[in-house]
Amino acid sequence: MMRRSEVREAAAALLDAYRSGTPIPPLSTTYPGATVTDAYRIQQEQVRSWTEAGDQVRGHKIGLVSAAIQRQMGVHEPDYGHLTASMFHPEHRPIPAGGFIQPRIEPEIAFILGAPLRGPGVTVDDAARSVRYLLPALEIVDSRIQNWKISIVDTIADNASSGAAILGSTPIDPADVDLRSANCTLIRNGVVTETGTGAAVLGTPFNALAWLANAVGALGVSLEPGQVVLSGSFTRAVTIAPGDSVTADFPGIGRVTAALAEEDPS
Image 1 (cartoon, rainbow, N blue to C red):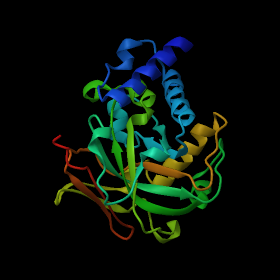
Image 2: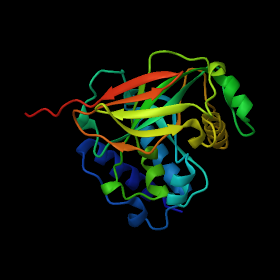
Image 3: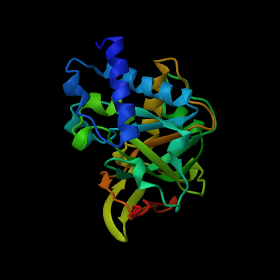
Image 4: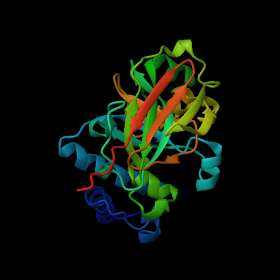
């Protein structure tokens, strides 16, 4: 267990990486005794700093949803991070690349909640009924840890490697699609780079939503109407660079496109 002073120190180091654009060594190396619980404490310390500065929590993102990634990280469940208002970017409008250090992009389904979810005890049916509508989405993940050398402690502490969220523009009734068998194609600069299905997201994205509600519910937190939940990637994350344009195509659901602005030569 990390001391309170160490939690604050680790959070300050990550916040400084956001400001400077310079990644830091893995926290799991700097604090070899850090636990997953410590990592969430570090995450919460950063969220507190952001909200005190005027940002607002708009929802959550779920990570580590695929079995392959869980095996790679040596974990048996997903993780989560917070989405703040400043992380959302309009579709098709170039996103400033300077806000990222080593960005990658993932195609996901975004849930917009119409009813509260309060765990523990939330079932998949409960989760499905809470969704007002869903949207195709892209998540830019980023790491404030040098060279993405992350353990489970590092990624959780770093707000689950969150970067930005880009939502599609056409709401879909969740009753109109089978998310388990939904397909996705990820296209970067006109070339197909990845394909995947909703089954990669814990069997279905609704399972991920139920897991999140129960995970935060154990901390006395509920998911509220109007909040956005990014449910986890259908595919592997793809590295992106300034000038890249990426589209996620979900047949029967919709498409969403994100573009990183060209670097300013000045």
